[in-house]
Each structure stands twice: as structure tokens, then as C-alpha cells.
Length: 204
Image (cartoon, rainbow, N blue to C red; front, side, top):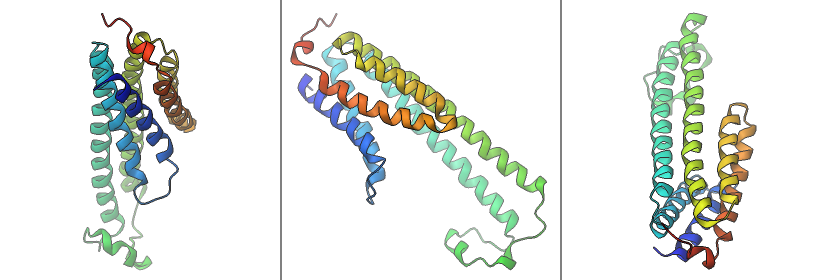
């Protein structure tokens, strides 16, 4: 993959992640994923161009960690939710489609704090795990973008990586999500700021 193609894919991918948060269409949830794939493809192409595989590998490690972490946490939440619902709705057979038909009298009045606490503890734990995963993902991406900044002389790549990491740290108080969102816009600007002159920089 040549330099120009990698530049375009990276910019478009970052824009898809940036805009996908707000597009209220049935497919909008898939836009960030498509954007991530395009960004990874761009980093792979640029890693080959500059002969520095750490540009791609760090981003790849972060992406794999994020996907595995989200998948694992999702399974834990689903199974713990099933156990909790069976605790408070003894008549429930595990069929999610029947939940809208549950009547108030079907809900057990014998639910105690001891039965609710394990579920709440799992939810709090999963939130904390997601926080750690997001910080780890941002850390790997920051390393990737710092390598790319050094190779291209586009300093905004390094700024993007730093903002991404700060945003991940502050996701615990939600304001970090805004910083991560802004970082995606900066990432798009970073890719589009690369010039053909920078493509010929020494690769050693």
C-alpha cells in the first residue's frame, strides 16, 4: 500500500469514528468499527513505508486488547444479568422476549440487599475493568502515534496520542469521552496533514 492511499484511508477512518457517534441511522454503530479497520490498514501501510513495524503493531495490540476486553465484559454482564433477573423474577424462564410481559405481581418481594449486592459488585467491577482496558488501549495507540510523529514530522500525531490517553484516563468521570472524540478529529487532521515531501523521509 503506497503512502497516498494510507494517508487517505487513515483520514477517512478517523472521520468515520468521529462522526459515527452522532449519526442516528441503523448502521451508525458499525461506522466506528469500519473506521478502526481503515485506520489500522493505514498504519500498516505507513509501517511498511517507513520500515517501522512498531507503528502498526502497537495499534494492533491495543485494538485486540480492546475487542477482547469488551467481549469478555459483555459476556460477564449478560450472564450476571440473567442470574439477577431470575432472582427477582422466579417465574422467568430465561427468554428475553417475554420480559415485556412480566407483570408487577411476578416480581419477588423477598429480594434482599444480600441478593442485589453481588450483581451491583459485578457491574462496578466490569466498569473498572473497562476503564483499565480503555487506558491500556490508549497507551498502545499513543506509542504507535508517537512513532508515526517521529517518522513524519507531523507533531499533531503525538498530540493526538497524548489527548487520547488523557481522555481514556478521564472516562471514569465521563468527560474523557469528549476528549477521546476530539482526539479522533485530530487524528483525521494528522493523516490529512501528511505531505508527499514527508513520504520520502529516511526510513532507517
